[in-house]
Figure 1 (cartoon, one colour):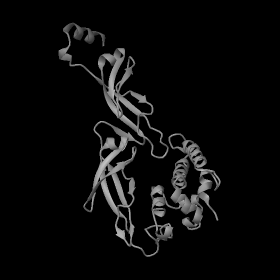
Figure 2 (cartoon, one colour; figure 1 turned 180 degrees about the vertical axis):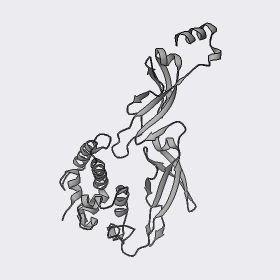
Figure 3 (spheres, one colour; figure 1 turned 135 degrees about the vertical axis):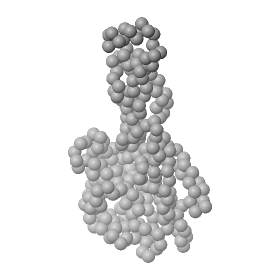
Figure 4 (cartoon, helix red, strand yellow; figure 1 turned 30 degrees about the vertical axis):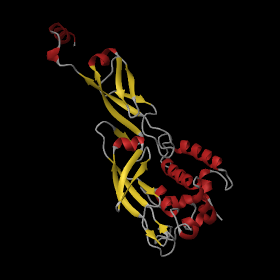
Length: 287
């Protein structure tokens, strides 16, 4: 029985959990889009992450070991993944496929020839769909968010690094049917921030730098998502100049690597009318 998920990670079917994890981390670093600029790297990166999501979960791995590539309609995983089309959340497709099933099955064939739904042939869809909007910093740092669904109020854990448009699955919070219970699928939207701009896993923040520090150098205190830091500003700093704080950005949910925080200098000019007359006269002559 073909089991191409193992081939995706470059391990054999008898690989241990540690061997699978080690192989995943090596490949994730190699094909991460921020490191590998090959046009094919992003698709390869998605396949690696999706394969690891299955093989790192004991229940999903057991299902896959039992049914192999028949879960992908007989295709190998690479062809299955590429056949889903651009912009498709491959992880979510696999979550749906491995999301449950009566009698230890894996969902049942859907109308598209794949696997989906809940509980096997002819069973109703027990999942509930919902949407939430979370604060920007909760998306960056993670945290709890209260949600109300069909009269039931509870907290859910928001993973650090989540992005707008991603879907979270909360097990057992869906509808009930014949002793089975579906899941709650939550589409997440992230509120914009007046302080930060997010680009991938990197954050950008504009900071005020007084003219004196910009000209002659100095130190400026800056609040980052984690804590306040002191930034050393070199002399002759230009307006719009960027300072990179490595590893102070957003954690990547797949690799656990953090992006960077870029501080963009906004040079603050003094009020000319408040300057000493002699200084004003000298500046007019010298500048």
